[in-house]
Image 1 (tube, one colour):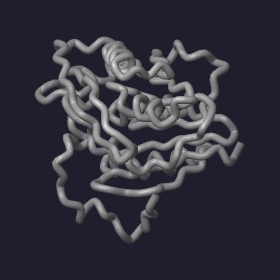
Image 2 (cartoon, rainbow, N blue to C red; image 1 turned 90 degrees about the vertical axis):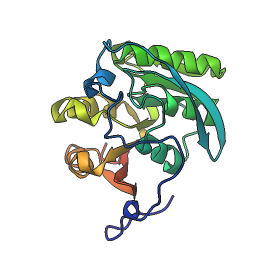
Image 3 (cartoon, rainbow, N blue to C red; image 1 turned 135 degrees about the vertical axis):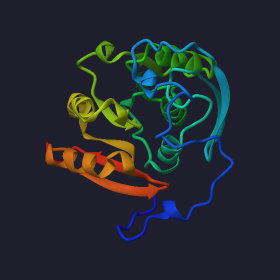
Amino acid sequence: MTSDPETSDPETSEPETSDPVTSASETANAGQPNQHYFSEEPEVESARKRIEVTLPDGSFEMETDTGVFSHGRVDAGTKFLLLEAPELPTSGDLLDLGCGAGVIALTMARRRPECRVWAVDVNARARRLTSDNATALGLRNVVVAAPDEVPTDVSFAAMWSNPPIKVGKNELHDMMRRWMPRLTRDGGAILVVNKNLGSDSLQKWLTDNGHPTKRLASRQGFRLLRVSTESR
């Protein structure tokens, strides 16, 4: 993991790559309102598209869909998280909050087959897609659930998320209030947020509300934030 000095932001100097990624600020579906991907039942017609995900520790194929965030590619923010996040705990429950097509949950499950990975999303199409992707990859340690379906006695050793910033500040803060307290005492969260969509203000809000948050890295307009449970 490389540090991110305040005076240097490498996103301005990095060349474009050939990876199938796009900015997280792009909508889930070209020409469609971006609220589809955080709707419970997207109205846009389903059109699944298979992609290959290539990471240093291995590659796999998965399906994406319209009405689910980042159709047809892995968005740049999520790819940044998967490349730069610290190692996952070796035991306990792990959480992908706002799982979309499931690329974070699938990666977690592949890296930590001994852990149970919860893939949580309000979007029913996203949940079906993640479940199908996990089944196709033979990942039996993935549990796909709507937020209200996660048992209240489950705590998480780690949470990774590219949160749906565009739901609005109040909804985003409610999401953080709901899930941050469910981290174990030695657990933590890794969030990737576009700096133009409020990453710095979210970092301050989390810290001010008892969840100490530090920036781990920055690239191409994205901040990688680490939220700890130190203040408990």
